[in-house]
Image 1 (cartoon, rainbow, N blue to C red):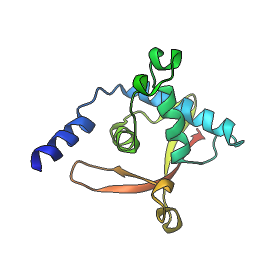
Image 2 (image 1 turned 180 degrees about the vertical axis):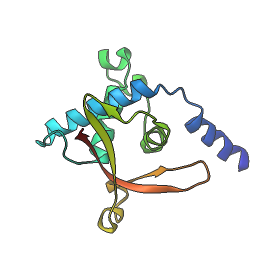
Image 3 (image 1 turned 135 degrees about the vertical axis):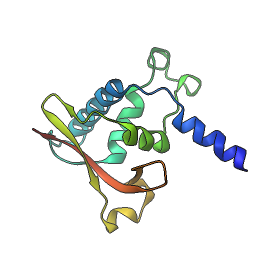
Image 4 (image 1 turned 90 degrees about the vertical axis):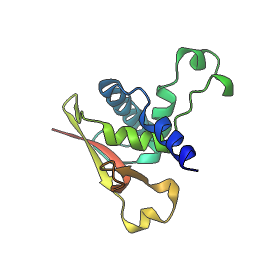
Length: 135
């Protein structure tokens, strides 16, 4: 059991991570979700909507050429959560990333929030929305 937990932990934490690339894709995913949901840049969006677009954006050329299950690069809630935790960059194109803490109403359904760690000890916050506010 311990070895299985260690293997899963390593799968999440030992992945290659490029701060600037992740942040650029995050901002683009946010912009796509803003457009799709008829919102404006600077407004908050459900974190699940941004995750959907982010997962699509990080697919490689193989998937975009032939979008099959076999060529899809898995990227779920756990990966997104950990990547948001280790993200150092917070500003892009005169906008700053804001993660909005989930209210009690948003924590009733798992699909409405994401738990994001704040350290490696198990502390974290429930986040329901993302926004990029103008600075």
